[in-house]
Length: 259
Image 1 (cartoon, rainbow, N blue to C red):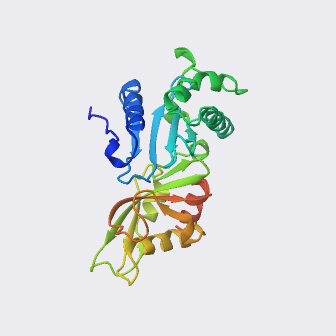
Image 2 (cartoon, rainbow, N blue to C red):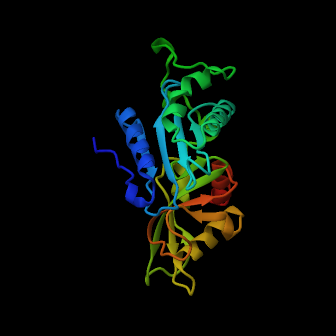
Image 3 (tube, rainbow, N blue to C red):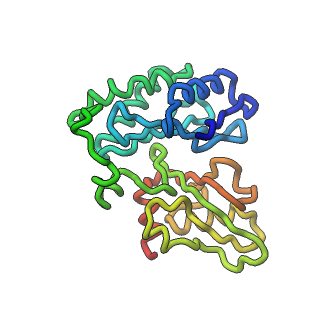
């Protein structure tokens, strides 16, 4: 198993926050229990990670976004996946409320430790099913329930927003700006990313990428934010873009509607 990536204090995060992340990685040390999705290279960038929540239900995952102002000025955002949409929403709200109570302190360990307790207060949600009651979640999910749970690898819920994983190809050989893997995305919900060709223009690549994504999704370029790097930076390679105020269902439907 490859070692977990660590967020260094040199990235602009305080030493206490770096220690908090290392402590979480130590607690969720099993295979696949902790995944760092966004490791910021700038001090004002967000941290995004997810942990398995097997105490809630088999296959349940909690995605956490730590904003730049955490813990003093801003609270973490939570997106629960792998449950029915109503249960996931209630549990996400409960985790956010718990974190808000602890604002000012590095609280992630305490909040995540309360997962089972918070889940037990949600009507109709049974936590930690006995082995004989457990099912193969991947096999049991129909296409409809997969969509409801947010099972797109390239479009991930982050609070009220969506994080898009984008792979950009640019250079003199690229003649047109477009999404190049629409057919694959429509066939395979687990495709790793949205692939984009960016043709040369007078604008920077990220401006062009923001314009393309905004026009496809039906939002302005101001509602497309790059988690690492701003619109003035080059976009070649792997990027992650936050689509403000749009759920993964809305984003995927807009992008694939004509595919």
